[in-house]
Amino acid sequence: MNLPTKALVSVLFLGLSTVAQAQLTWEKTELNLEPPPGADSAVANFKYENKTDKTINIKAVRTSCGCTTAALQKNDVAPGEKGEIVATLKTGDRTGMQVKTVTVETDDPKEPQTILTLKANIAQFLELQPAFVFWTANEDPKPKTIVAKAGKGVTIKSLEVTSSTPDFTTKVEPGATAGEFKILVQPKETAHQSTANLVIKPDKAAGENKVFNASARVMPSSS
Amino acid sequence: MSSLLRQTALLVGLALLPAVGQALYFRSQISWDARVSESEMVSVDQARGWGADAIWIDARPEADFERDHVPGAILLNEDRWNELLSPFLQEHWKPEKKIVVYCSAESCNLAGDVARRLREEARLPNEIRVLKGGWEEWLKTRK
Image (cartoon, rainbow over all chains, first blue to last red; front, top):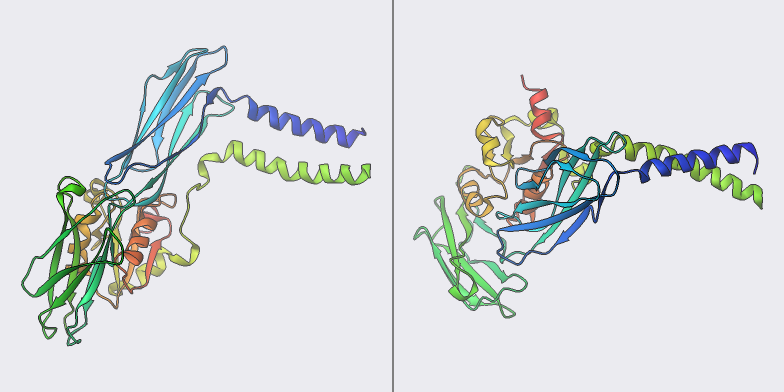
């Protein structure tokens, strides 16, 4: 091995050894969660261990979003001690893949920050396609359809839909498959602007008091 | 053959060095979860230029919105999507207007999620853009 090759190999080993000296050892820095439909939170447990002979101080834990909290058991981690950071994502009305991070700062000068990633795939309880129907002024007041589909793992046998105003009528028909419904929405007329909130209630067996909203609107003639 | 291997090792080594450096020293500055493409974004200057032709949507948590927000912006976030979407559609939405959605910073993905849901769930026909740099960028250029 000539001199430049030796130098290169030395630099590479130096780089790799620097990475390997991370003090807190994490079981996993990325966790994938599949909370059940309707769950109000998704919880990730990031487990660590101090495999060094020195106490490590966790100086700060920050989350990427106000919707996520991170709970730390203690700041000082003694040699050989194990622990975890519990990250909780409040699902709210979120759907689909949610990627949130937790940044952990320690007193390790070589790796002061570790980023933990929580990925939660939040299934929709009831999918509305679309959640909004509208008519332009003087458009033919034909009914428009909202397809309501129960999410994966959710059983919905019937839907009740009510309009907040008598300007719109609604009718529910069964859809193409079980758990699917067609909501036909029709304005009385389209000469004047009007709006309605459509309150959609699945049957009680589907879940406790779950209520969803869709909107209908006849646009004003000026727009 | 050994010369070829040496050259390969040299190239790999040269490529690895800046990568190791970046991973060590700039880890917190990398946007790991950016999911909005450049074409779906709009700069603060351009969005301001749209004036009354744009509707601004604040996708941050309600407490942040209450503290301060872009003048005229409407609160619409995923914490209370079901509750907030209908009033927005019934009272503020206009088909001919552009929609600008923002959250707190470049790295947040709340605005991208709200923009996606307005397109896919509400199926709005509007041009919907995410504000580049978010609220932080807007604050820097506030007049």
